[in-house]
Amino acid sequence: MLLHNAQLALTQLIVLYVIVGVGVAAERLGWFRAETARQASGLLLYVVTACVIVRSFYSMEFSRERLRGFLISAACGVLLHVLGILISEPFFRSSRDAATESVLHFAAIYGNCGYMALPLAQAMVGEEGVFYCSAVILSFQVFSFTHGAYTMAGGAPLRRKNAHTQSDAAQFRWKTLFLNAGVLSVVVGLPLFLFAIPLPELITKPVDFIAGMNTPLAMLMFGAYLSHTKLKGFLRSKKIFSALGIKLLALPALVMAALLAFGVRGALLNALLISASAPSANNTVVFAAKYGRDPGYAAQIVGFISIASIVTMPLVIAVGLSMK
Image 1 (cartoon, rainbow, N blue to C red):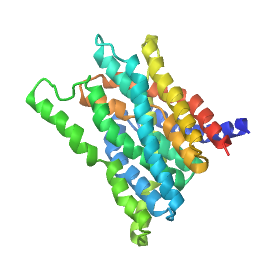
Image 2 (cartoon, rainbow, N blue to C red):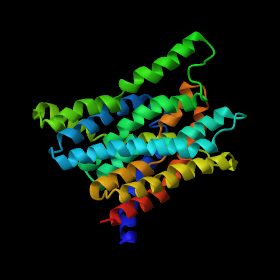
Image 3 (cartoon, one colour):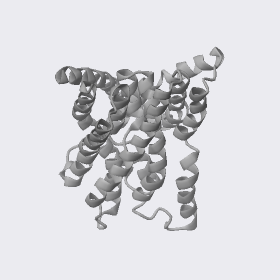
């Protein structure tokens, strides 16, 4: 049974990575450059992903069980990030190479809840999986734009070289905490679910069409980023494997143990395990550029951990599917 479930999860993951491979080839052939992918990231984040989350709310029929699941998902998102912070802290304390340490620290904690977890949850669990994953995305936004920004800035995001940078960091840290696609999508979608507000087809059809772009666009963009990943040389650092072990093994195992202990099963368990086992967030690269770290190195880290997740994610998901 476990092997069968692993094969199912691996098949879905391979489907996604076939699209990633198309993105790699398109970038190498000059049809879809990494720079184009970066420019399209705003479209994906603020429009497509937002539509995916909102659709998951209005397509769910209200029930107390689903509301309970959403609240459990939000609590799990908080647990996931708190555990990540606590576990990773002892591994990335060196002040001699703060730039590298901060990138690795961020990558060890923050997962690709949107670009990787949402498409996989949609493929494995359906709209219910997206619904539960959206609560994890909400906690991701809160933690990444506060603790994550603090970490990437080397523990002092507000102590910058000049007043302009200081103001910019403060604005990024607090204003963006609330005014971002993840939080606003939940704010729009949650009342639609709670009060069963009907929407006309004139609204739902365009949202459905745009939301359908999420998986192919996210994976094509991811492939464009991965096309420049060079593993030789930078793998000599043992701390890279510390980040990988925390993100792909320790955190999913601890979250799984907690969920099973509280009797969480079925679609809710599978959706949350997909979120917990997702590789490092693309925001690792974005934040690295924002706070003066090396975005190229950050892209390599994200690429390496993402490639390793091809092995780890099916195993984690298979265990979840086997739990009755």
